[in-house]
Amino acid sequence: MKRREFSKLMVALGVGAKTTFAEQSKESSIQPGKAEYYTEPAKKLPVRHFDVVIAGGGTAGLFAAIAAGRQGAKTMLIESKGYCGGIAVEGGTAIHSFYNLYTAFENCPKVQVVRGFPAEFIDTLTAMGGCTGYPEMERGREYDSICTAIDTELYKILAFRLLKEADVFVAVNTMLTGAIVKDSRLRGVITESRSGREAIMAKSFIDCTGYGDLCAHAGAEFEVPNDYASCNSFGFANASIDDYYEFLKSHDALGQMCRGPRSGEENKFVRMGAEQLDIPELREEAEKIGMSMVTTTVHDNYLMYIKCNYKIPGTVVNRDDVAAAEMEIRDRMARAAELLREYIPGFEKAFIARTSPSLCIRRGRLIKCDYDIAHEDVINGRHFDDDTFAYGFHDMAPKYQIKDGGTYGIPYRALCVKGIENLYAAGMMITSDHRAHMSTRNTVSCMAQGQATGTAATLCAQKNLGSRDLKYSDLKAALLKGNVYFVS
Image 1 (cartoon, rainbow, N blue to C red):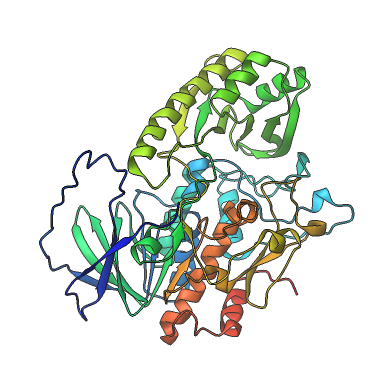
Image 2: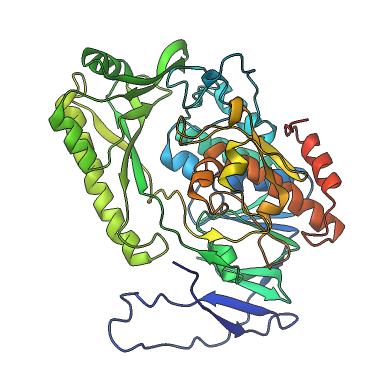
């Protein structure tokens, strides 16, 4: 689906800036018959000023805000939910991947390719007992070399602590409702919370919403490909991964497997997956509800991650389609819990203890940027003269792997929103080719994109530059200072 037309309304705000708002979807059930409209009266909004504003406190936004705050930028993070962390905590699975796929290639060197603030975060979380760190996979080594499983709740706690330390103004429970654009330059955003509506003016902006909400409000070009199933996941208590191992082993169905630290003890199962099961009834029922047979954990007697996929018959940016999907997928989770209790010995008294608060998408709007990363860039391990970091994981491995277990680069221009100055897109909104996107959208890539854009936005704000006027040498120097790894 191509981007919708956007109406453009003029508001008297400071210098007479132009504010653009998304037009109501023509399919919306709000208007079942003849279209009816209500014109809001003009209203003066209180104004706040910042150097850098980040929309979305998820996987990318958290690290964008930390990067900006640590470099001294007056930074605001806008998040619609009451916590930060995004898909990393809502999905609850292992996050992929800080290392190259060295286990799939003979004599391939092991390299931690994503470092910087994301790795620092994981190291701290591991020390808190909320992460496995980087244990090597025993099975499934052609898919990923490492299993980094997390405790979703400790992740949220650490996120807030680091944002506070970085002196970031954190506006959770706050909706982004509009953008202020003048002469193709983003000047501000409109927010709404229980405190009312506000205009937030800044020098640099980053869209980390996952859905591309800020880009859409600002008038960026976008599509909605609808090329993924969405999912929801739940945590299953009174369920031991050791019992799951014995069940799979008894059916000769062991798939992905990793041992690492669990509940303070080393060399424990932390990831377990199934190959083809010889129980047709379970297999067929699991397929009906899109239930994955892979799980991860960092705790005894608790599975952090049971996933149910669902391909929405509509679009993830349509409220009514998503509402129907939320209802459907929670029924699927209930059925998944029933199946696990029924078939796996030791799970008889297990129960759902955590669910994703809302649908987990893999792509919302696809935002057009100055460069579109191609499938060939990824699998051929291409690096660019404006790399912002290196990455080495592909979610379609072993079908698609980065050449020789190497890495490719995410160029700066792939993060610059086309046609709009001082606006970056970070996370799952970039990369049009589905095959390439199956790499760039992954958690650790999004984290690194956050640090890259947060660093760039800060430099632009501090130097009073447009995003395309920033010298790459200055950006790379700042990223190196932030311990980002570059392929020499």
